[in-house]
Structures are given as C-alpha cells and as structure tokens.
Image 1 (tube, rainbow, N blue to C red):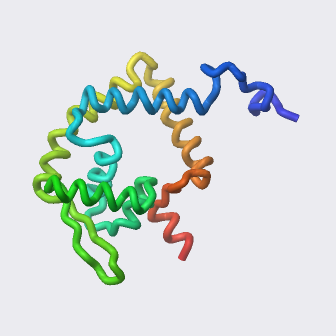
Image 2 (cartoon, rainbow, N blue to C red):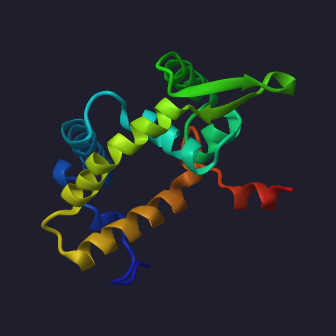
Length: 166
C-alpha cells in the first residue's frame, strides 16, 4: 500500500505532459538547445563532457573514460577520433590495444574559452527557480540518475565503483 510519501502507479498521470519520461526528454532537448545557444556549436554537450573528464583525470584510457561519462565504448572511441582530428586530444596506444587520452594545449585552450558559456548555461537552466528549488532539482536529478544508473545502456562507473569491484 502506497503512503502519501510514496508514488503509487495511480499517482502518476497518463497525461503526456505529466509523464516523467516525456519531461526528461523535453528537459534534455531544452538543455542541448541552450548549450548550443550559450556555449556554441564547436563542440557537442557529449564532447564537452569527454573533454572535461580528460581535464579532471588526464591520461584515462578510453574504456575508463566511457565509464566515467556514461557512454558506450564505441561511441567514446568515435568521439575520441573526432576530438583528435580537431587537435584537442591525443590518443596514445597502450598494451592490449587500449588507448590513453590526453588533452592537448589546444584542447585546454578550448575548454578555457567554453567556461564562460558553460557558467551562463548552468545559471540560465536554473534561472527563475529560486536557490532552494534549483538545489532540490539537482539533488533529485542526482538521486534519479543514481537509482536508475544500472538501467542505462552505458552505466556510469566511478573510481569508487571500481574499488568496490576489486
């Protein structure tokens, strides 16, 4: 029996505009559109995520990078090839056909140029919500992603996940 704090199946409306999946899809559309408006079209949001992760953790191999940003390995490999062709990263061959990825100075310069747009994007996405609602939304999004991570085609894996597995 559902309590007032639980969400029962009957509590979720079948109205399209109240369905979580539809709202998440629309939020993603809005976020990508605003990314292009405020950050530009030189990189995609996914390419930006890859570059930022390489900035945070230089020298990651492609498989670990894919796990850290929640992408499948073939998509990550395709993105790495594109970013290397643009001169923003280098891929070094490691044993067992793995590749180590590093930002180039041009890649770091690009990220430095993108920071004002990303800051504006983060502000604009939450503008008008008020500080408490904005923090609640972020908290709930993190919780949603955490609770449903294993349902993803490419689950996010962190360093702490890897340590637990060993």
